[in-house]
Image (cartoon, rainbow, N blue to C red; front, side, top):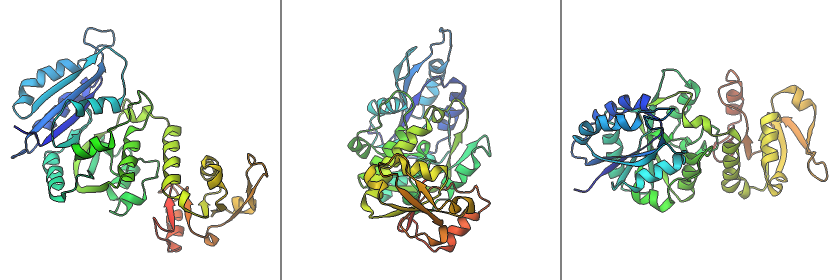
Amino acid sequence: MSIDVSIIMPVRNAAQWLNETFESLMKQIIENINIELSIYNDGSSASGSSLRDETLNIIEQWRKQLELKYKLIVHGYENEEARGVGYGKNRAVQYSSGRFLCFQDADDLMCPNRIHRQYHVAINEKDDAILIGSKYERIPEGSTDRYTQWANNLTEEQLYTQIYLAHGPTLIMPTWFCSRSWFDRLGGFDEIAKGHCEDLTFFFKHLRNGGRLYRVNEILLYYRYHSEATTFSVHEDVIWSVRIQEIQLNIINNLEKLTIWNAGKQGRKFYRSLNDINKHKVICFCDMDPKKISKGFYTDELSQDKRRIPVIHFTQAIPPIIICVKLGLTNNDFETNLSSMNLREGIDYWLFS
């Protein structure tokens, strides 16, 4: 029997979530789709250890029930240092065989129609180079509300234009569904043990190689928010560095000049993060704050010539513009000002905040 979809689930000390997660898997609408569940245990603490985690015991307790619905594959090891999320996902993929890969975090819950909806999108689109995501709800309800509103309400065009924001991929990783052939062509996830944003680097690699983005505009996942999530192990500076590298590669390297919107901390940090060639493309900073504008210029103290860069009112700004202002934090003042300029996102300006 050939497998249509492999559910890819790395686990590490996930005992407190697994019962709920497996319950959601058992509720999947499968119809005529052949599905396997590939679990890779990335060094969970054995039940007899001092830290004591019941991850493997819970998997075994569910084995017979899961095997009524899925081909079950379990690999990995116990009581060792974690080798990282990217490593765990790659190994779960390696031991699986499905034509398509459905990524599932051990602490999240699938809606009953998730696999059915994403599988049929993949079949109907007839494009291996497509990354399919979906809308989601947070558990607990209301956590990271600004982030959730952003991700769930992006337009089809914004899935591509807002990729440089600190939020991360415009399709959130726990909802990803893609073909095995495309995943293999891209080389899988980076395998760095700790503190690496493997989802973001894979996402950028996907786009650089001509991959498409598709969001199913339905809630197909309940995305859990908690203090032990791997998201919190990734330092902000790591994500910043990856984003800076990508926006220079895709956008700024191809520009002759640019304006930075935000003469404050974030705008100056963005400028200092550019390579020397791209720093010299910055013709000015712009802002709406009279205090910042009144200073007249920003001095690049690290440059040999102590270059002075003008600071102007935003209404005088000349595109292209890199905007280093966070959305949704200025009582809509920034958004109103931006709208008044009739600029085109992805052509006249790009968001980086």
